Image (cartoon, rainbow, N blue to C red; front, side, top):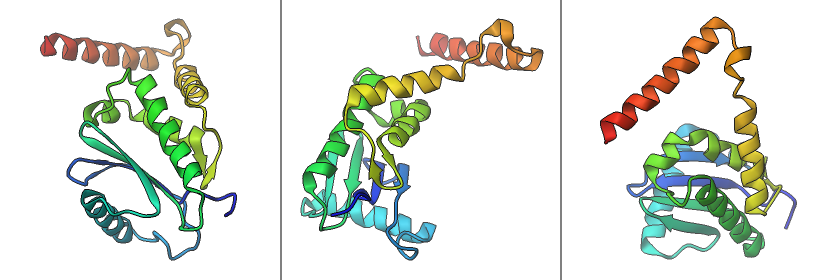
Length: 172
């Protein structure tokens, strides 16, 4: 058991396609190429469909599957804590709508909360509320008030809001 307890965090859709993936290899050969990573993800998805996994924790939610894995020497409770914290944080941030569409639309929250949870394989925080608060703070820090924006920034912000409003109208 070491400080670097987490080797990967993945979210795959119900067909085994990658939504997000973050790897923390213990040596240079592990997960070194994109082909190796894709093969690993496909094999992992197949194994979890057969329900005979040993060194990873996973959580099914609607049309996505969350994975957290570590080496066979790791404490399973640490991996489970990381998985539960990450899932609870995203459920809170996404208002209990944890599905593929919401994860992709809110990819900033998904990736920021993962960065608050794990850094280079080291579990930083397991309190889902604390992670969610930090994530929400970081995402609002980048929003500059309209009065302090340059003309191109203001135009970009207005365009973004118009597109968002147009989508809502089209959905209704």
